[in-house]
Figure 1 (cartoon, one colour):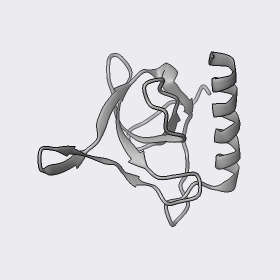
Figure 2: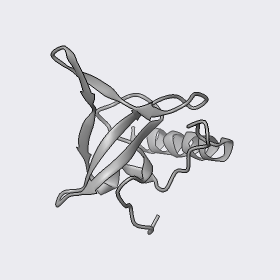
Figure 3: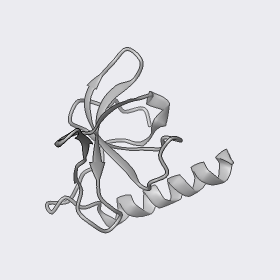
Figure 4: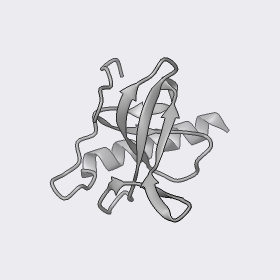
Length: 104
């Protein structure tokens, strides 16, 4: 896990404040405290798209800041139809299982 994270990279996260799995995001930029990210919405088997949240009546990009320690997998390559490859799905499932088994 020594490779660097750059803007526009797709990464997997394990943020304690969210229960959804998997947690996928696109990096916007590195900040002094971690990374500025744009959350993505999808599922292990479905397509991924950038997540939006409601701001009054408008839908705005769901942007957040995360710590480097929240990243569990870097440089995810989505398939041409914006899905996770089988290999990535298996890796993420085992990473989340290890995190949840060891953290609680």
